[in-house]
Image 1 (cartoon, rainbow, N blue to C red):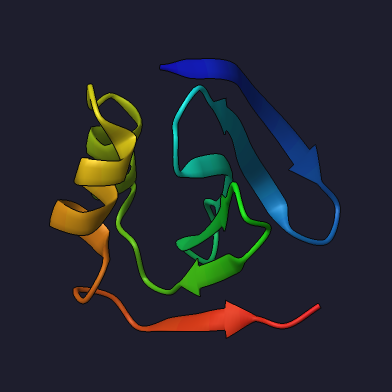
Image 2: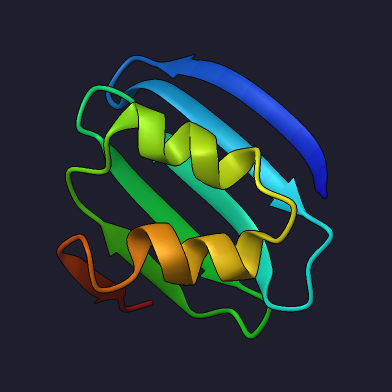
Length: 86
């Protein structure tokens, strides 16, 4: 379940969709519409960036019943990803 869903327009990043999750594994996601980049932050604080995620896939992920399962099914190993180092 999504706790919050916000859409912001950042002058540098463009349209940004932010979500918080009531999930055992996921904490937040940020979707940068213009670059089709999805940033996922897990409960343990680790973040990954997924490139070229189509907005339809992002929407299917956000609307899913289980976000962890949807991440594994729709996004992981299907899009180029990189760990975001702090």
